[in-house]
Length: 156
Image 1 (cartoon, rainbow, N blue to C red):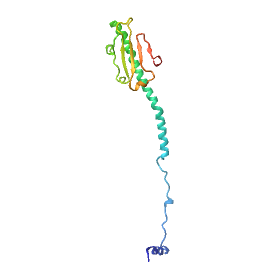
Image 2: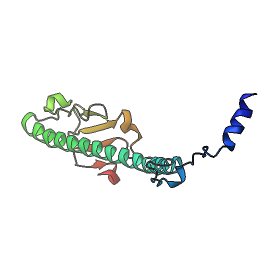
Image 3: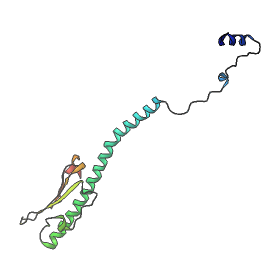
Image 4: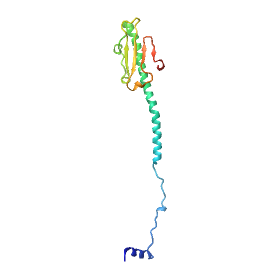
């Protein structure tokens, strides 16, 4: 007699009762976590916000550096006027004026002073030339002269 035939005979006896599955009686717990679609939606929203915020942030940083450069230029212009009173001529460099460019401005602007020797009346021009990441600033080179003219006029 083979094994399957003996199992069939065992099933026909009254002692055999099939075991019922109890999985249908369990209470289903709600699944925790996020679906892939939900995660992808959140990632795309964050990417859109980052794409909008990054240029705005960069523009604000450039404006901050420009404001620092303007402050240095105005300080140097005041010192030039005092230098003229003391020395009867304008200084030809920032070091001669005692103006130190802040370290936060060093990689973003180059500040130079030009004062032609022997010019009548005496003149000077103080320039802040953008460099590095500041080179893309819409204002370009900032300047102040002996008459107090600030260029470019729309950036002051």
